[in-house]
Image (cartoon, rainbow, N blue to C red; front, side, top):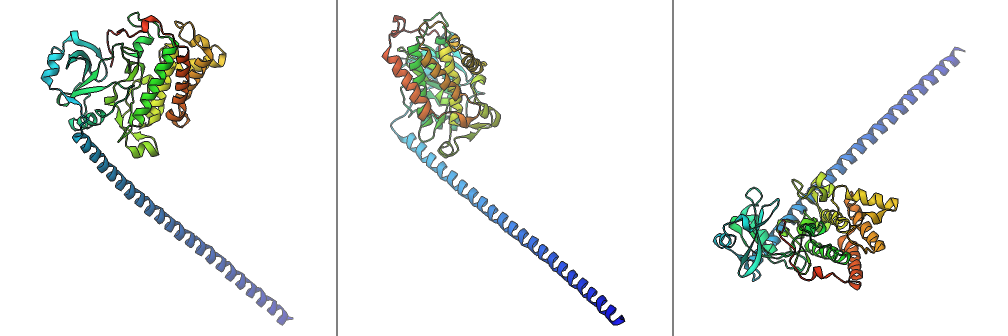
Length: 390
């Protein structure tokens, strides 16, 4: 009996030892698995760090290569035959009567503008204030690039005096779109046909800027005050010389570029650009959208997008149209407004592409306008401008 009891106890102790060994082995396996997982995680982190380091090296090499390419382009531009005319400060002072107040036709954020004659041609001379002018080297480089830009919907840079920050532009006889929309000086009402044409011309000029070589240009301050009209009411984008050059790698890949501070006029500034400092082509699309709404409403930009959205929802859109125009094609104007509202989406990625969506629709509306185009005699090549804003 005692022998049997001893055997039972011995077996129990053996079972306990075996269970303890199994538990110890299980714990060891778990620890081993944890160790292997930690090693794999560390190796993965190392691989990611190596990839990130390689990406940085590649990005730095790409940036260096692009900088060298830009320098080559600028060097070629400096040696090319397409050059701006360099005026001496003495010539400009004589033409403007030493920047006389009687010659002054405007004042903007960058400085005053004077109307005068140079080389028997009526011109506008913009003088950059010392606190707004860029460094001489950068100023010179931008002039070298802009002197090669030619487009019928951009104000032409005729010359400059880089040493004193003077830019010489063609004179635009009918002032700004802002003046014409709000009929300053009691000027005639812009007919809807002309408004549709102007909108398409602005879009055409803006797309040209966005496709400029060697580097795309983002205007940053697109508004009716910076759209000027010539004697035939052809619209041209102005202040291009102060636009921001965006590296092509940025423009083509992520379509945005970080700026240290937002520039532009409050109601027209892309909200994303204002909040993040990230500048892109669609920053201009937002400004264009606000301006398109003004073209058909002749209203202040403050709260305009919300006002038009609410009117469309309530079925009172026709009441938002400029009442001075008696014959609006309401259905087409509504399509125009909806396109403009898409351009003013708060999220940049939700705004339509200028080249693929916005401009084709604006061109369609321009074609419609031209089919019924009967401009009043008031708009037959006249000089309505008393001042040219900047």
